[in-house]
Image 1 (tube, helix red, strand yellow):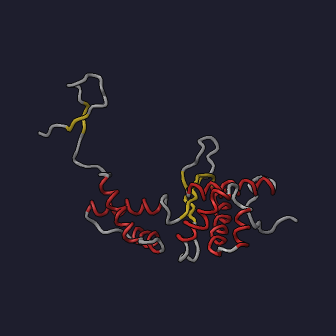
Image 2: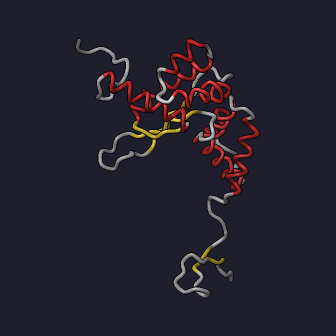
Image 3: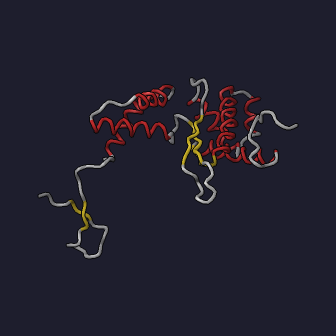
Amino acid sequence: MAGGLVKYRHLSRKSSHRQALLRNLVTALVQHESIRTTWPKAKETQRLAEKLITLAKRNNETSRRAALGILYTPHALLPKLFGELRERYAERPGGYTRVLRTEPKSQYDQGDSAILEFVDGPRDLRFAMTAAAVARDQKLGRPSNELTLLNRNKVTRFRPNGKAAFEDMVKRVAGLGLGGGPRRKVADDADDAGDARGWKEAPTA
């Protein structure tokens, strides 16, 4: 039948190949908590990952068997899924994953790329970026804008000890000394000519 709404992206694959692809991606997501792929694949994998966390929160024999049929390495990842991840999202009502658009992965086809990640995890990119924005505002002595405050609320709302973890991340980012400073480095050729690895602080007038 022509026309009508498409309920899901076919990803230019037949059904069995599509399901195998999504199972492979969601297995990698549970293992690494952050993966990079194309935008359409990330959006379809996100749906399966959200379902997987919902199964983990039910935590019964039926949900374990369903998760067993999704993951490619269930014996290695089921303890993490029904342990660490279930406890992390116990109080969160939904939205366990996030898709962030990135620059095209391939310079030849310029296909839309994205990062799919679990929120509130150790590799939460928005958490780190928001902390960097706050650290920069504090360094410049100016208040954070409305978008930064909104993101700060999002990344700390359901994270365990979210505010304390966020402040710790802000201090860690500030300690990196990003954003430029008064220090200026020049090559030190007095000790070893041609050794570009030696640096010293530039003399001040």
